[in-house]
Length: 231
Image 1 (tube, rainbow, N blue to C red):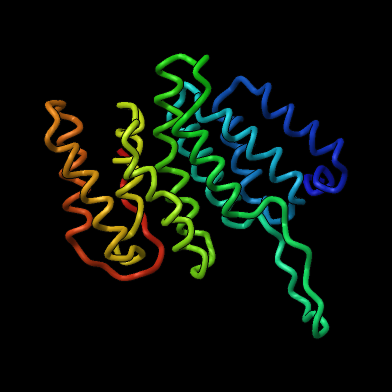
Image 2 (cartoon, rainbow, N blue to C red):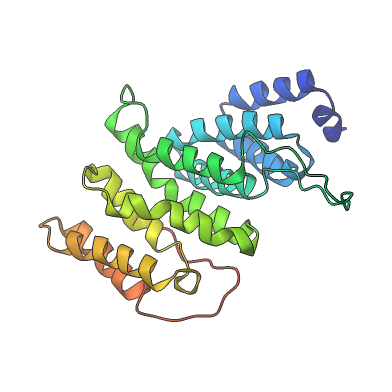
C-alpha cells in the first residue's frame, strides 16, 4: 500500500505533508527512513520535493534527525538522475538535463554553508554541520566515475577567503568524511592548507578539529565504503 503513494503526485505530496507535521521524533525518523528506502522508486520531481523536506530537517532540534536527514540528502542526490539503460540507436542522444546530480549537489552545499540569514545562529550552525552527513551519504552512494566531480566542487570552499566561523567548522567536519584515497594530491593539499591555517587560530576546538583533518589525510586506506565517526 505504501508504494501507492508514489504513483500519484497528489498522494505523494500528502505523504510529505504528513511527515512534515509529525511531532514525535521517532515517527519522524520512520518517515525519513521510508523516503530513503523508497527514493529509487521516486520520480525526479518527487526527489526534489523530498530533498526540500529533508533540508528543512537540518535545523531540527534532535541531532539524530539532522544526521539521518543529511545522510539521505546525499544518497538521493547521488541517485537523482534516472539512468537510461536501453541502448540508443546510432546518432541519437538524450536531451541534456536541466538539473543534474552535480548541479543539485552544488546547490545544497551552498545552502548548507550559506543558510537563510533570517534563521537563528544555532539553526544556521546545525544546517552547516549537516554538510558532513551529506558528504558521507553522497560519496559512499555515488557512481565511482562521478566521485571526483563532487569532491572537486568542494575545493573552492576550502580556498575561500570570506568564510564565517560556522563555515570553517562545517568544512573541518566535512573534510574527514572524504576518504583520502578518493582525492588527488592537489585536493589533499587544498584541504591540508585550509586545516593548517585553522591550527594557527586561538580557538581550541578548531585546533583539535584541524589536527584531526591533518592526521586524516596523512594516513592511507583502501577504497570502498567509508564510515568515519561523526563528531
